[in-house]
Length: 539
Ligand code: VG1
Ligand code: CO
Image 1 (cartoon, helix red, strand yellow):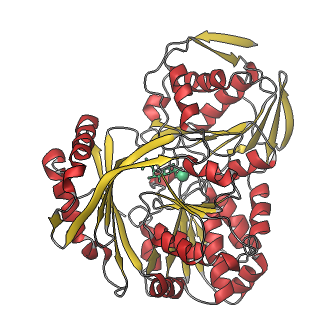
Image 2 (cartoon, helix red, strand yellow):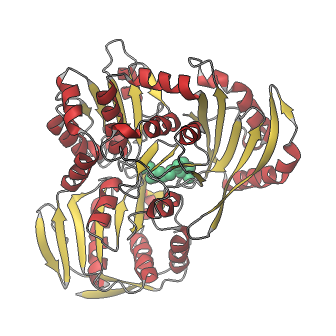
Image 3 (cartoon, helix red, strand yellow):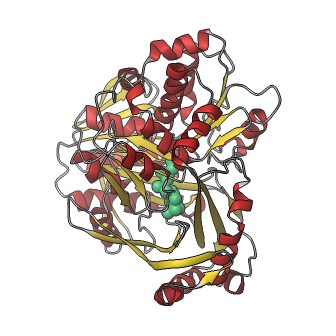
């Protein structure tokens, strides 16, 4: 039954910010998935007898890729796979299962917030025993292997039935099919005050949760409607679909537009939320009110004492460098250790493992804690519900009070998409050259204090990572430039802009940041080089 297939290397199987992500059209090529997976097994080395968690977000090609993965795992001598029923697992649920079962790692078949379908994207996230995605040292080694791989091993057997719960055998390998939701729900019940949130819904509190036709639907129905008693119909788009019903499962003001319309209508529910394709991102809305992810991290951190699992104290908090400084002021007020890391959740893992931090977040709608080693969309939603239940205040009241206490960091991210890689790389290289000369220069009302690349030295493993170029201004304003590492074609330039305001809280962010946006355009010569005079996506 064992087949050894000779194959040719692929030159494009480098993992980015979060795993491998490519156009579905590329991934469906013969041997593409096999090459990548065999390179992972080769890099791990001795996989004999090891155990892995396997699941995905249900997007196009999940069903095909998961069968390849199972047959290759068996052929490579892996001892056991624990697989979500029908191949479903959210990224946070998978991380939990890796830690809970102390497995050697796991695979989530997902391109996360990227669109799915034959014309969309497919991806593979590979996590180590830490529960978090492979660190760069590991993903670099895997990439090297993809460049020289000559053959892969696969079992020549019919497809495995993934619909039946329980245990079956494939050769010497055990396959256990589990309920993808159960363990995750138990973990959430152990963190939050479910009784208080239940009372909140009993009192008539209303919510709209948009699962974006992606993997969180079954989790959200179970938790919000069945257990916590949110009105039936509160969770919409709850059936995971291979093409996400044509939606772009990226929970932000641009792509979650139905939810935004609902939350800005006159009869809006009290609370609104959405998650992304694989369930690790979250967006939080109140009645006619949007909470930026940067503010959300700050608010959650400020309120940790309201949550049963955190009330006795948290270790510290971290953010990605591009995230606004809102949480820094909270860390200072609570005397909490604080870290700023490169973009990508894997950089938080060492800090969590070494008990330096409990909470962490990214501006890209990612928030989480050390309960797992991935960001966790439903966790963030439950955290907000728990705060609302404990304080009796609305999302807007909670956030306004927060700003009054700490000031408001007006913050936005501007994405310039579909730039050619050469143009984008040159733009960044030239900008980096020019950074030292910017100090002291004035752009409108803003004067540059210092400009430099962001460099992170990991306090645990000593590795050093350069990620993005940062311009700090004299009044605490900040512009960060970096290139996306999750795209599947061309380059995306991300420009992150923030400005602290201690008195005016109800201004339009875009207006507040207009001067800094113009400065960014001028400094990086964006229009000249890309032909774009505005960003494609503003969030
Ligand atoms: C983006 C975000 C980053 C996030 C990553 C993975 O990366 O900016 O903050 O960690 O996506 O998110 P990039 O390199 O495109 O900026 V997900 O939901 O894939 O796990
Ligand atoms: Co995601």
